[in-house]
Image 1 (cartoon, helix red, strand yellow):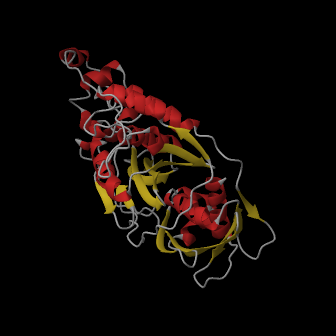
Image 2 (cartoon, helix red, strand yellow):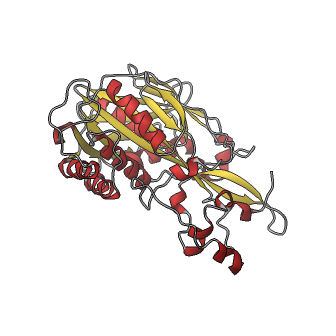
Image 3 (cartoon, one colour):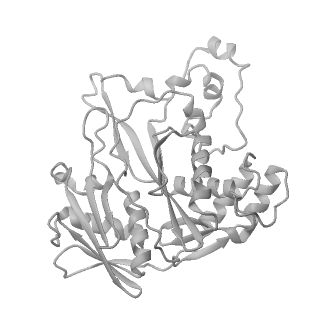
Length: 395
């Protein structure tokens, strides 16, 4: 498929008469939407059909998780803002069937290294319909909805907040909305894990961007390629979810002030000291994590969620992840992702390569060894890149 990139980029109109004729048109913004994120506007605009990597359909739930190490931040200020936005005071203790947490002790942000997550006393069963409604209200269709595995993933959507917000764009936006495009798509994966009397909620981001290829003197071909995960978008959606869960009235629409307050809470969560490193002089690519095996298992899983690997199998008992790197294959052609670009000129040879990660630990120390399909330690370029990517996510 070939077409001019102009059809998928913000269009500036030079016809003054047309602009003046539309000057009376205005747009409104829902109080829930901030200037940083707006996927709901994109929901009404058909997006290009994207062929995406396989979803994680072979995950199995595992309730055996230990409390994580890392800083925690109280949500007292957040819940006050949410209560103010809804026009209702904070509620007291809730019954066992309540969905939204009712006190500051029921909801908090925790952080370890570069990873953040929400912790609540609500059960996964209570949270699941709220999470589903949260993503739908945010403008997303769900590509995966697997409550037994604790995995929910959205379809690709466009963040319309990235479009220009000048006078002309605001004036003609409603009329020419289908001609305006950011050239980017986002999707989010939510993982819910039971940890004793608490439930942990993780949100990871994946992104695509549209690039033009081919001779510039002729019509260019537009293709979708992977772009790096955006920690800022992950923090934004965690903040929005925190507001949703911290609001007693689930039908209330949180204000931008409440979202901003939550975002400050999310980003202010203190990070622990560096807790992961590569080990030299090993027969294969090996990294070491200063955490228990249970917590390291969870953190490695979150790091893989943010990567361009498909997890084909998770064997918690054996401490094994089986991975397959999948090129996006968008626009009818395979494209390199962030991780494959790290491999340099050999990226095409690594497409579809399977690896295993073996976790073993003692006390507060865990080793992660990269293996080939025959479970032998491997130190090729791909294995080293996997280890380096994990260290970057876990430290």
